[in-house]
Amino acid sequence: MIKDITIGQYFPGNSVIHRLDSRVKILLDILYLVVIFTAQSYTGLLLAVLFIVFCYILSEIKLVMILKSIKPILPLMIFTGILNLFFIKGETPLFQWWVITVYPEGIRMATFMLIRVIALIVGMSLLTYTTSPIMLTDAIERLLSPLKKLHFPVHELSMMMTIALRFIPTLVEETDKIMSAQKARGAELDSGGLIKKAKALIPVLIPLFVSAFKRANELATAMECRCYRGGEGRTRLKQLKTALRDYVALAIMILLLAAVIVINFVPILP
Image 1 (cartoon, rainbow, N blue to C red):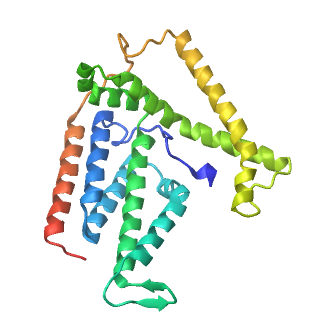
Image 2 (image 1 turned 90 degrees about the horizontal axis):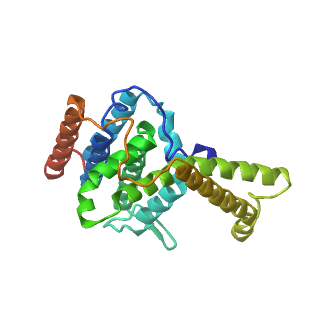
Image 3 (image 1 turned 45 degrees about the vertical axis):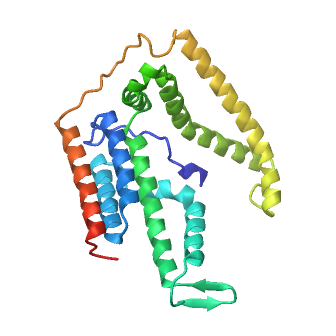
């Protein structure tokens, strides 16, 4: 499962989604979040799901990446579904055994929340899949640039966020290597109860922390050797420029949001 974690990975390409301005892509992601949480019916949620699937097709990223982005959060999804299934009350119980009572409303809410979480994770993953860390840093810095007047460290914040996001795949790969090495030495990481499994992770976490601190020190040294001094006077290889496709994408997202709001007032499906 560790190898399937794709958060923070970037897949180079020349698709329409890749060529969108990174600032616009962040705004689109924010609007997509609003759409997901605004949708109060299956119809509105289905529109959001179809839209994000269409974006994946345009980005030329394999749809199997959707499954890979979902797989690591399966335990959270199951836990969320169980909570909604057993704690949402209704009028007529559908199933009852001992202290467990399941209502149709609980099933409906559990299914709705699962679809919402899946759409949320898949939509957020598309941003990092199609945007390089450097462009993501520049976009965050540009969007937060008005805060510079309040002496807010915009560049430092955007750089830290991007570095943290960028190193997720690296740390995942490092964790997998350490676990494989420990298993080759006879460590039993997958057997026993919860407490035993937690104790077995200690030989994995210690070298992982050592490796993370080592990489952070190497990165800091490399940045100092390249005379990095923050955002002041910094030049950029690629300048952020908006084009017609960016405005079209924003218009489509706004229309999607408007459609979801209308569906909330005039529901087609429950």
